[in-house]
Length: 291
Image (cartoon, rainbow, N blue to C red; front, side):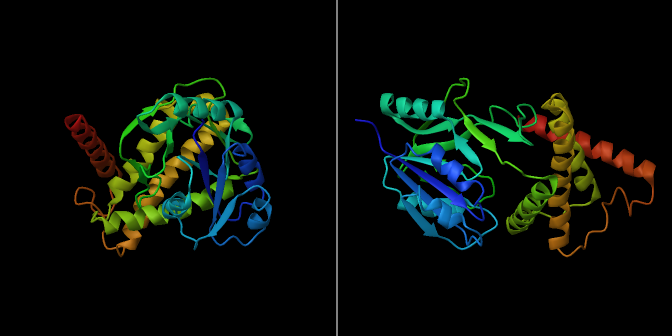
């Protein structure tokens, strides 16, 4: 007898995508949509395919809303899906086979292929971009942390990469402006969380280093340049996002730190470049020591 699956989807104003997403998980025995105060026709369009629609207040991140759906699920296995994602037919087949064959696994990391502007972006998208989205009911929940994975009690393993057996992350029609607005909300959340956790407000070196290292990682280390112009655009946007998190942390702390002691007030470009180089070397050395 095959294990029952419960798909959990958190949505807010996703009328253009919710049906497509739900159709991709129609094979699941239960399909729970957690609607975060949508002002469009998300609920109406989800009603045809969802087995349950749950109201949840809007929050700028979805981890707690996911937990609400997980707690209401009745299937033996939970499958968490975002409204702009699709579960391919081949992945559905693999998941059913995997959970039926392995009796002591509590969670499965699933590969994801990220797309933008209608094209796959395997390099800057970090393929296989593993996501811990499939796990036994009762094995874990999400912590209150942006972009976090569920904390699973028990053995977890990675699903081997196989052509077309992945989550397809493809938000049709998303513009650069849409992406920037979405990441602006994420930056607000991350900045508040850092201050809540006791982080010191950053100075200019931390801001510049965050942006430069993000661009270096996305464009050069991850080979984002192989994804063409889209890879360049996203590398710059990722760099700005990291800069924005630092800047918003500084802003939320009261804008009180006007400069690092080694830079003064940024009045000397040579001093700034020298201090930035030293800052980078210390960061790299500390990472090497931690490893």
